[in-house]
Amino acid sequence: MYHLKFSQRGISLIEILIALALSIIIILAMLRAFVTTGKVTAEASLGAKVDSHIMLGLIATDRILQGIGYGLINPTSSDFAVLDSNGTTVSLGAVGKYLVWKISNTHCQALYSHQNGLYLYGKTDVGYACSSLAKPADSTIKELLIQVDHSALNNSGVGNTNNKIGEIDIKVQSVAPGCSPFGIKGHSGVGLGKYQAVLLANTYAASTDSTPRTIQNITCLFNFK
Image 1 (spheres, rainbow, N blue to C red):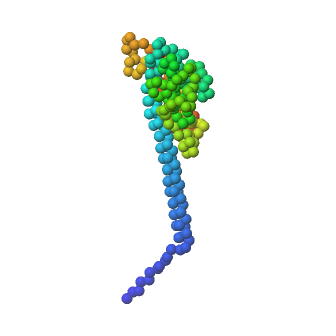
Image 2 (tube, rainbow, N blue to C red):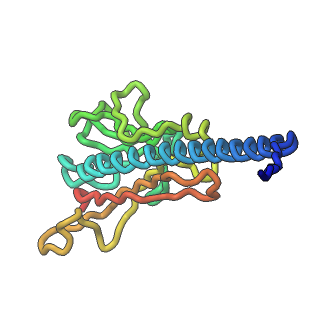
Image 3 (tube, rainbow, N blue to C red):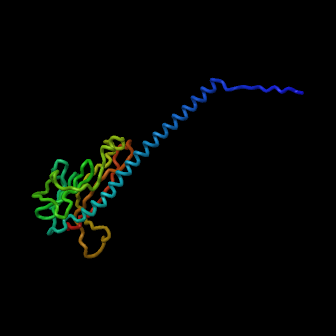
């Protein structure tokens, strides 16, 4: 009979240590990728939430702005005013934070761009009592049209002083030869509006962006002929 000799060899301690080291490196890389993916997903989710609030709010705001001047006799530019954050009137075409307009001889409504979003003051058809086109008092009844959580944006790193996500500016500008509401442009016998309101909103952008990503929502103030 022949006796077969088999050579047996185990795993050395060095090989075990190398395998463990490689395993630890791979696990750490996977954890790092998981954390990075989670952070990106959370930022994108927050940014998308802000964008959706802005889009839906602009639709509601557009419907409100279309009614400016309705019910007034021969409304003119003296029936509305754009104000800066301090309440000082800015010139036509310049951006501000308030848009105040008359709905009667004694009552007004106003839009206010706050750091927390866009507010409508005097949300009912009655509006609020006013003697001039000054900015409304803080105690005036108001409705939040666009919500922007600046605290969450800044704490997450999504928002910064460069991209200015959620910041909204308001302006009213004259338009020549005139403007008309969507759907009736070109119809004979329909007069054109003299002014249009423009809302400039900064939407979601990567935190490293050096400039804001601004969209414009333009509404024809059709009642001002």
